[in-house]
Image 1 (spheres, rainbow, N blue to C red):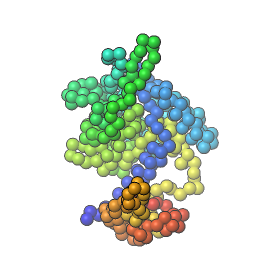
Image 2 (cartoon, rainbow, N blue to C red):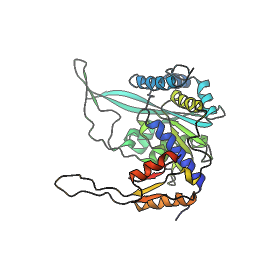
Image 3 (cartoon, helix red, strand yellow):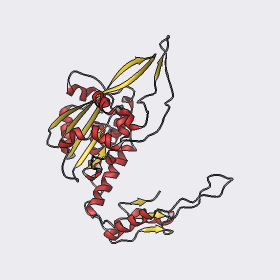
Image 4 (cartoon, helix red, strand yellow):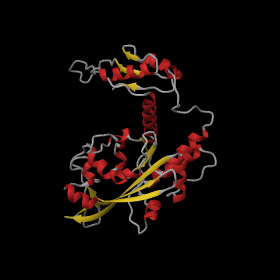
Length: 336
């Protein structure tokens, strides 16, 4: 049995919560654009179809923050450096540059380059570029195929004589990821720029399909996950990242969401609750989900470290959990 420190669980919980809150409040905003200057690309590449979503998210957050400036389409360099310094986080922003061509009457999109900006809390900014065409020739594969076998970034578009554009249905909707290859393309080019300590934050700002990438699960050549090296968050844009920070900062009287120190009384640990039988088909018997002994063991390990009692099996009823929730600051829920 492998024992893990309290601090490890706290920073893993903190990383998960921050990522979960952002992912459930928004979708990807940035899209590709080609410009002659690297900084102009960083400041101006917004997808027109996704721009209203960005403005809506920003407007919602702005209303919740008194005296906050209006959301803009782009953030200048000084603002990005300021956000990185304020949040003491290394910000990594991606942009996929694409080419379009007509093949047999259909417009096909092919990724050509990946632009990566790394902004450190010190204000230092570095730019790296990955030639996706060259990578594709070496690997005999398309970068976007790493998101699923034979999967296209968009369905093929047919160009008719009248100028009408029609869309074919994707043939494969699989969402399997090649984690080592994604690490090779997304992380290895900037690995030397990322912080060395696992407790130091790294905020990824993806673009387009990259927003579906499970950054925490990316694996290096030795099989080590990225979450083991860094405390990871994901945000849709610099503006939203800043507004979320300002909103949290404005809650002066609120307790820290994830405190530096926590007692067993402030934890509600639930592991492997007994699930009721579920009717899947009237013609068949009810199905009862399998038990999760690994989740139960994990709950007991956490409870032992914080000297508290977990809710396990039959004791983990909905009534018992709801009754204890008001006193809990963190709720590790280890179940289906």
